[in-house]
Length: 247
Image 1: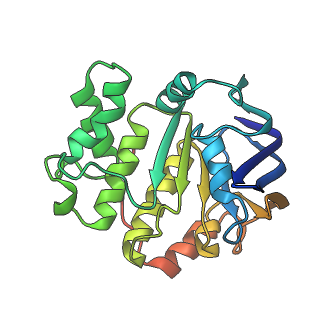
Image 2: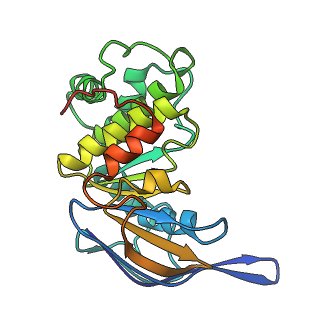
């Protein structure tokens, strides 16, 4: 799914050059669930932006499903983002005046897709929000807003979900609901790359990649609780699991 070799990213601040990434190598297989961890300033967000085709590297190669995207122009990158990637952000990034249904329809509008309403409704049903489709973000809890964001990420049938601190703004129970959805998506074969600072959340993942000063210092590290029982262990710490409808 992802093959990154020798990726660097340099930012210029006046006369100063900042090397946010300094020769990163990373592979993620189809169906894998990977956490990216590291202290502030380690390069997590920069790497996530490059994986998500939101930014371009200074040098190096990035193959996404066998396609070189590191040197694509902005129009090409936008197409890749719309057709192949689904994004879940810490702050939800929902349009405040739009209903849940309208928010989920947005990627389909940009893709000029048909059957938008039916597909958006199906995505909301998939995350257990079939009864909240006409509610606006201010009428939804934080956990429900994040579920809308996940439905929006899923509506175009992406090959890769990118989640940036998806439980960072949620209480423990809402966080458990969101991670329960992620567990089900992974069980259905979805590839997930997730940035997190929380080792309890990283415990869900099959693999942890650690960054420090723009370099990978550890890869292939299992989550802190390890093994196939990791999700159950973390769920117990975060709160009772909530049943979510499968897709």
